[in-house]
Length: 125
Length: 436
Image 1 (cartoon, rainbow over the protein chains, first blue to last red):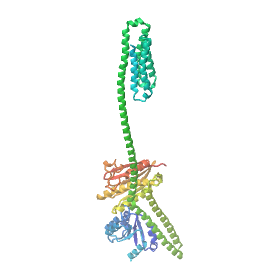
Image 2: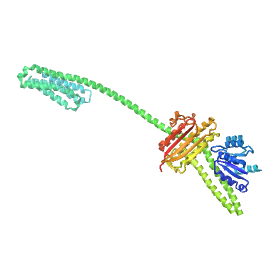
Image 3: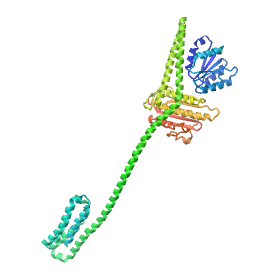
Image 4: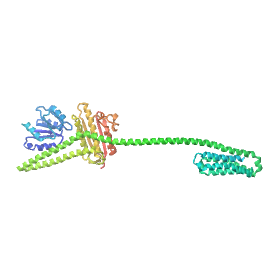
């Protein structure tokens, strides 16, 4: 299962790689990263069929996570990729907007990786 | 005829008495002059009875001369000097007449009439001079009266002016305190705008600190497992990860620390100490603060942030919190301008803020450019004035750019250049002298 993580903070990458160390080693999960919405769209253009789940931050300079979500929903619908949005704590407005645009689920910062793992387990079953 | 000479002496003394009557001189001279005036007649009578008519005229002349010369030598009587001098013709005539009478008797008797006329003329001359000097003195008195009046007026005006000057000084002092308060409240206002940005900026590193420490704990558990399994290679890989994580924790801890320190510096009254500062870091930090500050207020707002930070600019001497305020102000203005343009709903418009730094010879150049609403030509020369603002009442203090100008130009000896086309873009170029 391939997961694309979109976040402008490069340091989330080692976090994911370390947290999912075992899963990566056993080839259950594979991660790819994009540092911006634009980069994520470029990535999806060539490889959207590989990606099963997209985890995107909302608050990014340039294209925001919400915009990225709308693009994804407009351009890729067969099959529609699953998108989890990562919102800052207490950011009701973005939460509501992301819901409207068709996000599948939400995670709040700071990321609770155990919760994410739970959700993924549920997702892979 | 000598009676005229004595009369002249008498009148001279009386006149002097009159002149000094109401002055402190009267104390010293009054009595003496009165006595002398009586003495004149006693002398006249005395000489008349002793010498008879002959030679009396000569004596009278000498007497008047002595009297005039004596008075003339007294410095107190300097003001009446010209009046005293008016007596010389009479004295001269009296002496000449007396000498003629004594030495050229026949000649004198032949021209008796002319000598008498001359004495009368000399006598009349004194009074003519007296009258004219009286007129002069009246004029002088009038002038001095006017002078006193003028002096009084000048004094009055001076007092008024001194009072006004003191009032103005008070007002200036008050204005200076108010200015200081305004600067301080401007700082606090911009700090208020920043709060959301700061919260976001601190939250992010804190999240990393939490996440990396959690993941490291997990890694240690895994490391123990791998140790038990004897997987040395894995153990070494995990140890490397943990070490990296600890470095990340330290990095993000410092990041949060820097933000809090910057915030404190920003609100503190300027210490105005120049210190070597990395302008790229400073600009980046404030750009993010401004961006997240605005995003906190307007969630739908988004802008492209483009940075061209020249590498190896090295550090430049400046007052970091002051230049930080200048940058913050320019960023806030830029975001405000693109936000307003975005609300016009122009199709395909992407708000963009560009920040670039460069080292030009011996100056540091910082450019802040936005593709927002631009500055109309008619207000271009006003935007640096204090209290000038285009924002609605209550939204801007109108002090941001004027303070920025003071900081860059007056405190750092640099300059601010503004390029703008209405409806298209605005670019602020700040240059600060940078010595190697």
